[in-house]
Length: 450
Image (tube, rainbow, N blue to C red; front, side, top):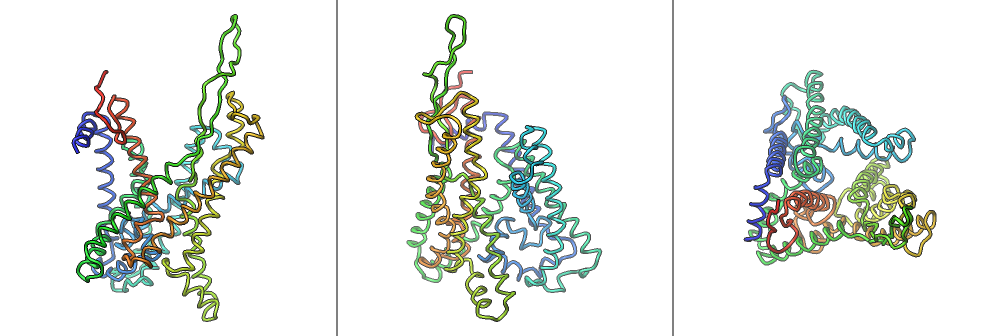
């Protein structure tokens, strides 16, 4: 505890870091306030059914968690930052298939600015499509017609679409400002804060269920918390795990006034991550999991239609999670293949005078790195799939409340872990630059020798 207090004092003593943390907190508070502001023309008192449906553990519950409850509140931030995430994914995929985007990726800073601008315009386009769908879908989600004070008139629809689009753009701006002026990745922090906002309520519901209803008592709550900590630690291991490939670099020396390569140069490593795809396979798989229930409705009351709707509408069901896990494994290989260009790594290594010991530079090095990626991706994909379906396991085996179970794995937990690690690493860089021990290092603080 004493070391923790010393680290907090050190953070506060660095003026730039103190301002960045303050800016981050302020902008996150603005986002959380906006998530509570209901769209003009909607009676917030009559949104209880929407809150009940979106507050559950179904697909709507996952979407509501990502928006920090704004979806269930019919808030001005109801669409959250997800349209921007969708646009970023589309642009990233186009960078693989479309030569124009591949060219932009090679143009450095100017190309990155153009890609960001295209992403913003695509975000607006997605919002324009999703906003009317959200407004018309409120009735199907249990919001009575009387909740629309002005009715679904053209005036209400037009103004609400403009507000929802503006809300998403403003949230995107907040995220970019946090990245530039604050600490951590702004977009990821907005999602994380929304997820964490649901944590206290979910835990209290679980606590009341165990203690008040006498279904396990405090001891089972303690066991659940210990299990939760273990899952978090495993998630951290999955996020940080790397396979280091030793690389030898030729060192240039001067002999008789002539530069020559010295074969005994410095040795470094190529860090190949066990999970190079992050949470993207889970996001892609979740997007596809909307398809089976939809196909079931198309088949109607037939045997296959009934089976599809019965087995793939429950995110904690057996068949849902079997298919979900298989899709995650497939998408992990797919996304790793497109984001880790082993041939390009091999070419860059050759140009910089580096080589893997015992492997010829060029194509053989690329094949060697590709083989390693294939070997380490398999356990990474299995681990990621197990982590994604673990909430269903604890619901079935331990009877944990569905809302609380969502924090035992899946996208929510991986996002929280990834954002926490990224933020801590940024804070560490400031501390180490000022000759202080980092947050993840034991021992006494070093003296400021500047």
